[in-house]
Image 1 (cartoon, rainbow, N blue to C red):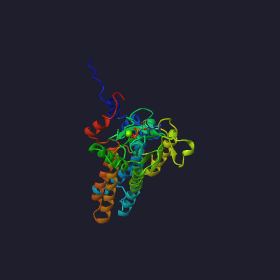
Image 2 (image 1 turned 180 degrees about the horizontal axis):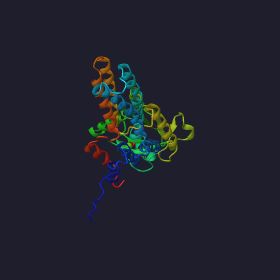
Image 3 (image 1 turned 90 degrees about the vertical axis):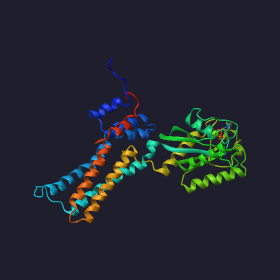
Image 4 (image 1 turned 135 degrees about the vertical axis):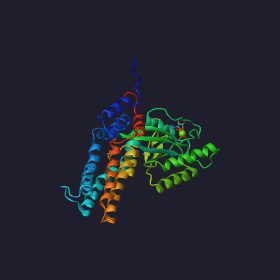
Length: 354
Ligand SMILES: Nc1nc2c(ncn2[C@@H]2O[C@H](COP(=O)(O)OP(=O)(O)O)[C@@H](O)[C@H]2O)c(=O)[nH]1
Ligand SMILES: [Mg+2]
């Protein structure tokens, strides 16, 4: 009696409003719950331990100090604080760019840790794309059929490749002679998926000799991937049907049916995707909200420096305005002044009772 059921994220929200977690840490709880790969988990843990708080405060503290100097000059021209020269102010602002840029770069590099590597399986109809997706997932997710053209839309499934969070994307078979609108739309979507992924697995049916349509498809896929700089891993599927002496090519021989070569395929795909995207960063900024706050802070610092350069005679209050803004933007990352709307959006991502 009197007890109302817990709302999503309510317990974490209570910890936040009681001041036990800053917003970044609260979000890290959500990320930890959702983190799939070992690396994603590590980044989320670091964030939970207050890494982001330290990194952001390393910029906020000097901003506040600068602000104190500027305010002293503006409000109490005869105060004890040493007057700051234009050059000194510029030097301290310039020094704050690097840590901010590092935060932003790590965020961009660490995108994969949050969203996962996007890996798309493409190839001719019946090559075994859907079978490979199921085999890599370890469960039957996509419909497999002897009838070519069974997969008509793209299908995305979360997976872990070599400890990395990934999204596997199954696509419709690439064919030039689509029999209806749904099929040609499927081909268009497959090509779009190819353009928007971190690595392409080009699945080839190695149990039968290739024909001219196969050759054209190969040229098209390799051409698109090269243009967009997407790494391609060629998987010669159905190797279980090949007599040993029939194996003419090197490349990755795999079998969705027997599981042969799947571990090698996972490794090759993860390596290719990571090499192309650069996955080394342990990002502390978690969402687009954090990123744009850090970005805005950097812009304010640049605006403050521009004010110094452009108004050498009257820079103090202009610079102070931008410094105050930069400080406030960074505060948003830690949840200072977060509006109810932002808080709700964050806490709705939690599971009930977490
Ligand atoms: N023997 C063998 N058959 C396979 C293998 N992979 C797929 N198949 C079969 O090939 C057909 C087409 O597979 P599917 O995954 O639907 O191909 P998709 O059109 O590329 O998605 C199905 O009958 C599968 O059972 C494999 O590694 N070995
Ligand atoms: Mg299919």
